[in-house]
Figure 1 (cartoon, rainbow, N blue to C red):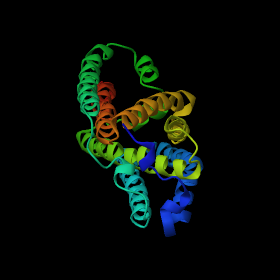
Figure 2 (cartoon, helix red, strand yellow):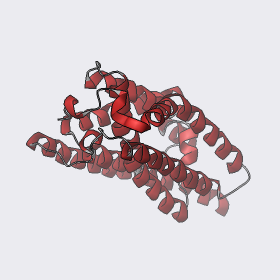
Figure 3 (cartoon, rainbow, N blue to C red):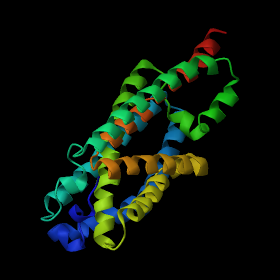
Length: 259
């Protein structure tokens, strides 16, 4: 379990990187939602005229995610009292942690397999119903249609699991506990879950709510295991479901071309 004692108890723990930590925390909570919306709107415009628009989006997501990782990592490197363990960069230290990690892997694989099976059933549904069931046009537009897009989307899914968990689940939690050391870990995690949901504002109110629920599950896994391992694995497996779902959307497009 994540021990509150290993987390920063004041901003002084970040040393010369204190200002950087605060700026990054403010950006993650207030800036990232606007950046996400702006990027998605640019993608929607590009999609109307450029068949490579999804690749353009995926590439920029990779750049943004790893740019944030680099900034957060640089901040931590300059922080004298923020340890690797305080950022979840360790294996689970208890039997419970390993059991939960194992359950997470099995559950994630089961959801992925169920999604692949559901695609076969959903092929018979009207396209409009499929779009609604997948979360609406904003989410559907991002799903890969071609083999090249699927390969890049797989990389984005892997990147999201690694980068977002480090940035939001670990680094952001360390910043919040440093700013508000009196907060219990669970309360600090709720603050971050809200920020994580708002970062997906481009998906609309439903997308924000769903992302918050998912973020709460990931936060619980992180706190209970004391490691980023389980959240990273689950995040990757959930995101990679977009590949079979994208195949579902690509089928009608091929049929239309042959008509």
